[in-house]
Image (tube, rainbow, N blue to C red; front, side):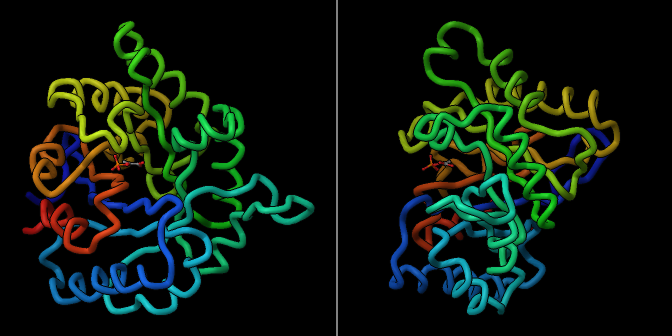
Length: 260
Ligand code: PEP
C-alpha cells in the first residue's frame, strides 16, 4: 500500500510509536534498530515514522537516531514555556531535546489527569509556539460507544481540542477508541471508516483545504497482523501504536504496511 487517499488528496502516512511510561536505557537498542532498518529500507517505506519515548530518553534518542528520517516526539507538554511547575515539561523543552511533535489529549492523560478539551486546545497552541506538530487524540469510551454516542463525543472532542488556524503540517489527529487501547480489541472496518469519515468532514468544514490534507491516524491495538487491514481503510492515514511499538520487530511489522 502506498500513500493514503482522502478524496483527490494524497496524504503521506505517519506511523508513530507511543512508548508511554516504558523505556530504560536498555530500550534504546529497540529504537536504534528501527532507525537502522528504516535507513536500510530507503524510499521503500511510504510513510513518516516516529517514536515518542519517555521524556528521559528524548535527547539521547534524538542524538543517536540519525541514520534514517526517524522522527522523535514527546508524549505531553505543559501550556507554559517555563516556570514553577514541578515535574512538568514544556513544549520548548521537548523541541530543545530534539522532538518535532508531541502527543496531546491522549485518553490516559484525559483520564489520569482530568485533561479537558479546553486544556488540550491550549496545549496545542503551546506546541505550535515551540514549532512542534501536535498529535491530538480523540476517542470514545466503551460506555459511550454502547450508548450510540461515539460520533457526537468524537466530534465534540475534535472541535474543543483544536484552536483556529491550524494546518496539515501543525496538526495530526489520532482517533483512539479508549476501549481498544491495550486490550487487543479493535473496532470493525466499517466503524473505523465511519468515525474517520466524520472526522474528515469536520476538518474540511472548519479548515478547508488544510482539513482535507490533515493526517488522521487510527490507534488502539494496532499490530503487525491487523495493520494492513486497518491502514487500508478510507481516511486512515497512519497509526498511533502503543504496546506494539516497544519492540522493533513488531513496530517495523506495522510500518511494513506502507512498504511500496
Ligand atoms: C495508545 O495508547 O496510544 C495505543 C494505541 O495503545 P495500544 O497500541 O497498546 O493499544
